[in-house]
Image 1 (cartoon, rainbow, N blue to C red):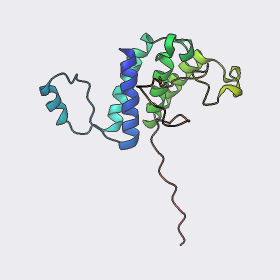
Image 2 (image 1 turned 135 degrees about the horizontal axis):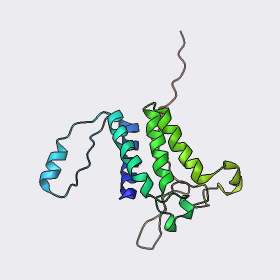
Image 3 (image 1 turned 180 degrees about the horizontal axis):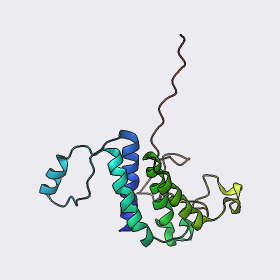
Length: 167
């Protein structure tokens, strides 16, 4: 359940960063009636969505492994990515105390940055000790095909820089 909560929070984080206000729901879409109800939802303010997600993450993060991702069997979702999302969303809401507390929890798990080598940060090195969250692909002849040689960032694109105007 905690993994699902983290993934939903990550997707809504990207949506609210990219589009601002978006429809937000937590109902199971298991019937036509539920689908029709959700299809009629309006947009919820991005700040309200983020606050609900932060509260939900704070509820479930104690139940996730309190360990580095590389130390969790099969590199499954662990607490640090939940804390990272809490911190990122708290920054959007200018809630610096919540962000600081979440980052402190990550520091407790990962320790001082000086322990991590600068030579293992190449993209070809997967799930290094300092990795917080990585999405892997599994290749098979009939399955997923690799499209790029570098990882793709999941953050929203930045607006282009404006050219200076002459007055």
